[in-house]
Image (cartoon, rainbow, N blue to C red):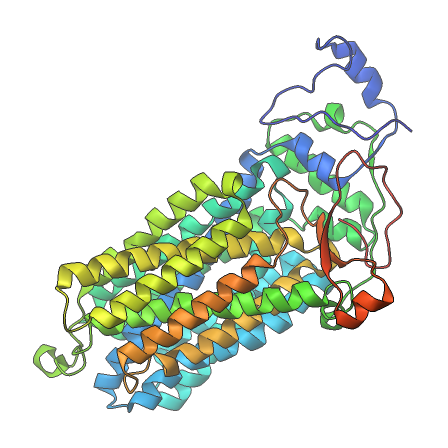
Length: 519
């Protein structure tokens, strides 16, 4: 057997010769006839980033657009129905909370399916549920039926970590940081589309509004069914090596790379791993990192969604009261909301430019501290500052929240190994949805904004502290950054084992996978 392939072929370039740096077609043909063993990471590096990954990007990205629209519409729908159906403040908060409750359940169920039955089935099931019940929302006949339908929408939204993980598992290491952030532009698109849809349709019918918000997910499901195959990392983790190689050969062909030259008679290294469940997240290997990850996600969700609801409340505090003058439709300040939502473009652009140089952990810490501080200043300035100052504070608060949330998503996908990735990502997302569930009650109209701002600042600081204790994954193979307990002596164990970061470098001799497996 020859050594692991080290040449990287991207966007149709021929692999370099191993002799004097010159391309030798005959030599390549001879080498392609030799049976070789390659890792999935090496195979994906040789495929490079191209048309195939862009297809997956559009399918997975539109899931993010769907997630954004289904979540962002809540701030408009809840206030509209509060006016139209004469709901109490608690009932209004329940409309938002039931979606996050559904997503809490959905992320646990669909994440489990993604690890045990495949990424693709979980992806398609998630989009089908969101699309179906998103449209059904328009036919809700009353408050109770609306809560049940929106719970199911949330259930589907809970599975949207799976398409993100699929995309991550098809990316070469050299492209991963940037493109896992590029996908967040789709979320931003959804954030901007929602107030636009509201402006165009709410005065006519909120039912038309919710149907429009379901369209991105319908398109995503169609693209996923047609263009997204099963993850080769998952396939090889369950022993389907031949099928995984077939997916990779097809991806190479779509990218314009000759699979016969790149792979020849190569076969993938057997990286079969034992199936893992939620209990494994709390095993000795993963426990401390899992807890830091969970608290980071809970804090990020409270911060992100709490900021959105706070901004809406600041600029639309009298929206319901003015509804009677507008045919029952609240008087939303669409201009201010749209401006603050567009801040996510700035935040995303900034983090894309810096995440690979600064690193995942410093980016998160800076973003959460900045976002919490600005939201605190916004809450304290209501009633005393001008609308321009409030808009500026809201704008930059949203920008920092976007930066932090984006990097948290990227970091989570990178530090978890294949056998536990969607389970671990989904469990973290479940903690995030739990935090989001709290938001409507924390930012509810009965709580003073200064109190809200103070609590949110504390939550942001705790989130930054938890993120600081996660492992840095910049420049590492997917899942090859692990957080393990140091081997410590008995005295240190009594005081509490310290953790150390272990990085699996490419030049290490491959070892047999452990009981938890390797990527």
